Every structure is written in C-alpha cells, then in structure tokens.
Length: 297
Ligand SMILES: NC(=O)c1ccc[n+]([C@@H]2O[C@H](COP(=O)([O-])OP(=O)(O)OC[C@H]3O[C@@H](n4cnc5c(N)ncnc54)[C@H](O)[C@@H]3O)[C@@H](O)[C@H]2O)c1
Image 1 (cartoon, protein in one colour):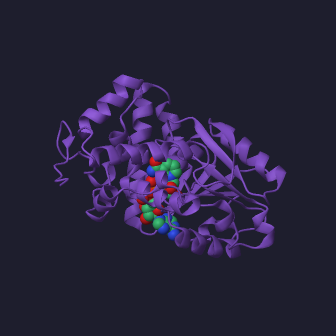
Image 2: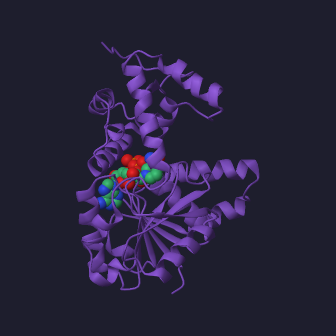
C-alpha cells in the first residue's frame, strides 16, 4: 500500500510540526484536535513556521500556499478513517492514548498504519487495545522538537510488528526528509533513555544548590559545547511533558535516575510548563528572558 493520506492526532507542539512536514513532503494531511480553538492555535504556529522558511528562501511563496492547501483540521475522528497512516501526538498519557486508539481502530480501514510519537510509553501497551490485525501494523515514529528542523526519527517496532510495515515506516520517515534510526520498544527508546536522566539531574543539582539556573545552563553550553543548557531545553520540551515522561520511565525501570525531582512536580502543579505556557525555568513574557523567581527553600 502506498502512503498518500496522512492523519495526525493532536496539533500541539509536536502534532503541528509533524503535520507541517507531512504536508511539505506532498501528503494530504488531516489533523485532529479536541477543539476548533486548538486547531486554530496549531495552524497559526504552522503558518508562522512556513513564513519563516519562505522568508529565508527555503520554500517559494507558491510552495507555501500549496503546503497550506494540503492541510486540513478537524475535531472528528471519522475524518481520519481513510488515512493510510495515522501519527498520534496527543498528550503523554497512556489511558488517553489507549482510548483514542481503540476508537480509531474501529473507524479506520484495515490497511491504516498506526504510529505513535510517544516519548516514553510502551508501544506494546498502546497497541494491545487494538485488534490482532492492527497490532501487526503498529509502530512508533518518534520525532524531535522542533519537527521541521530536527532531522532524527526513531522508528520503533514491537515484538509483533510486521517487517514490511516496519520498513514502510522507515521509508515514510525518509520521505519526510528525516533520518530514521531503528529502536526497540523500550521506554524512552534511544534518545530519551540518555537525555531524561541528564535533564532530571540538572534539576536535582539546582535543588541542591550546586549552581543557579543560568550558571548550570551556561556551564553545559560553554563547558561541553551543547547548543543549549538543560533548563532552556526542558522549557523547550515542556516541563509537563518532561514530568509525564519521567514518571513513565521510572515506572518502567524503577531506577532513581528516572524519578521526577520534587521541584519538577511542583513547577508542573504551578503550571510553569516552559515556553508553551510563558513561564518555566525562565520567564518568556519578558524580553530578554530571565529565570523565573522561585523560592527553593
Ligand atoms: N515536546 C517534545 O519535545 C516531544 C518530543 C517528542 C515526542 N513528544 C511526544 O509527543 C506527544 C505530544 O507532545 P507535545 O509536546 O506536542 O504536547 P502538547 O501538550 O503540546 O500537545 C498535545 C495536544 O494533544 C491534544 N489532545 C489531547 N487529547 C487528544 C485527542 N484525544 N485527540 C486529539 N488531540 C488531543 C491536546 O489538546 C494538545 O493540544 C507526547 O506523546 C510527547 O511525549 C514530545
């Protein structure tokens, strides 16, 4: 089966980026969100990003219009029923994801490939809510933020994934202009297995008074040549998402290095989610950004 029509679930940080690269690669792309307002918000982000590419001359104005015309938004699951592949990028919550897959399984054609962009949830755990036939067509496609710029996609297979479907997933990632790597269905796959303990350790170092937010960020940038420090990166990923990922990885491995530090939990409870909510470790409502004042003792 040739992939022609792509469905995307969720038009947040990741879903909007995935929809943008799919439409840019020539696929008819339909995105499902829970409300019209969230579709509007996600599409505004896509338009801003496309405008930047046009400004830089990476795409022409004509291409920008064509890409936009291949994208549509919906709040109904039925509009995804004839998609050849569905890439799911809804919140990192197993129950929400399982509920969604169960509903879609009954609606989609038998050939539709289900692909999750989860960062940490086991693909097998989501897949098991679908029919035995769909389980063979279930993979992980883990993109990186910001999707239009980041080249990597981890393509994940379960113990049941059909080999031909898996290779179609690898090829699909290539058609989106990405570099696919192969990963097994272990929580966090390759990148987050190594990244998450690092981000959490930076928060623990802050809690223990090892250094300030800015000094830890500067140290990792200038000392190791990282493009950004761990707090800037955490704010970029979303602290709510980082927290959910840490909880899931801790439950999977039961190792302290994956346990979310108390400060992270408190920041999420205080709705300091990072860039997307305006404040995280830094306050983005002010220019230039400064660390958010937080009393640590
Ligand atoms: N943020 C990152 O850097 C990053 C990187 C790679 C993978 N991921 C993964 O991508 C997924 C999404 O993360 P995000 O950062 O885009 O989160 P986000 O909070 O920005 O977006 C999630 C969106 O999903 C929507 N949603 C919730 N339930 C839905 C449903 N049933 N149908 C359709 N939409 C629904 C929400 O309204 C929200 O807009 C998560 O699984 C996350 O682990 C995130």
